[in-house]
Length: 140
Image 1 (cartoon, rainbow, N blue to C red):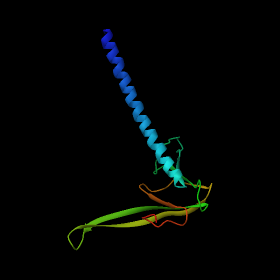
Image 2: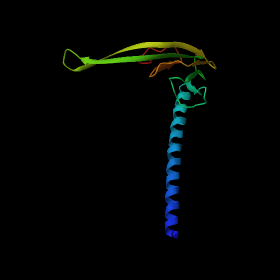
Image 3: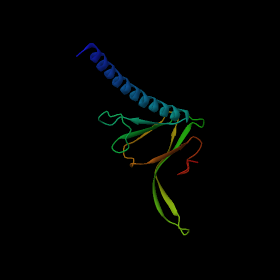
Image 4: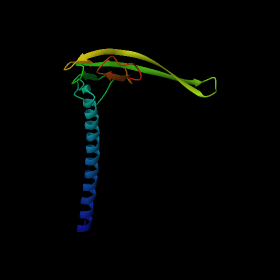
């Protein structure tokens, strides 16, 4: 291999490594940004590792830990729910979607308290308010 070929091969390996690092940094920044937004809201959702140490955010077979870090009222009110939506044709001939929401868990935590779940249904949604129990599904 000539000197020029070696330099080109080395440059392409460096580019691939640089691209991989940029992708990893982008994912890390997205996680940090999401965590920062959760902290700014007063209450945060923290995903605890599974029994095998997996740190991926999973709701099926994993553990989800809710923690009330800081709240003006001293409490964080949560509603965890699922939604089932059905689209059908309305009287006007246009599609109309109707959703039914089922509350899975509704609870309140004082500042510093945590609560952990290991059996939340797949695709659950959440609402949180610091002043009172949130109304599902609009989180008002």
